[in-house]
Image (cartoon, rainbow, N blue to C red):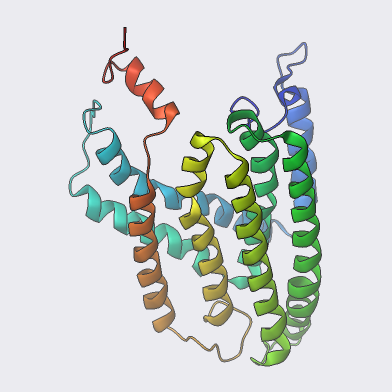
Length: 286
C-alpha cells in the first residue's frame, strides 16, 4: 500500500534482515486489535473471510471493463461469454458477505469505511493534487463520526442487546427500538461519506475526479449489503422483515443493478495505459 502511495513511505523501510519492520509491527498491532471484538478464532476467521470476499466484487465487473478499455491486449486465456460470467461472479461475490450475516458485516462495513480517510490523506494527496492538511482534517473528522456512531448506534444499541438475547437462547424482536438507531446510523454515514468524498472530488485534479466518479457504485454496494443484512434472515431477529428466499432474490437483483453501474463507470486509467504501453498495445508518441 505504501509503494502505491496509499500509506506513508516509512512503511517501506527494511531492517538489516530485509524485513519491512514498521509494516510488520503495524500488521501485528492491527491483528491484535481484531481480537478485542472477536475473541475467538472462528469469529475472527469469519470476519477476515467476509472482508476479503468483499474485495472480490470488483473482479466480475473488471473483466467486462477491460474488454472495453483494452480490447487489443494480449489474452492467453479469453473467458467465454464474459458479460454473463462477470455478472454471475459479481452477484455471488455480493451474496457471500451478505450471507455472513449482520453480526459480522457491521464490523466489516465499519472497517472498510475506516479506510476511506487513508484514501483522502495519501492516495488523493499523492496522486490527485489534494492538500494533505485539508484531507487530514476531513479524514480525522470522518473517523470520529464513524467511531462514535458505530459504537453507540450499532454496537451498544443493537449488538449488545442481541448478545444478551443470544446468551438466553433467543433473538431480538423487530421493533423501532432497534430500527431507529440503525436507520440513523445508515443515513448519517451515507450522508457523511458522500459529502466528504464529494469535497475531495471538488478539490481533486482531473484524474482524481475521474477516479472518484467511477467509484460511487462501490459506496452504494457497501450500504446496500448493510441494510439487506439488517432486514434479512441473517440478521438479529426472531422474524426478519425480509424472509428467505425473497431476501436472496432481492440481493441478487440489487447486485445485478450494481454490476451494470460498475461496468458503465469503468475507465481507462493511467496505470492501465502504462501496462498497455509496456505490452506494446499502445505505441509511444514520438
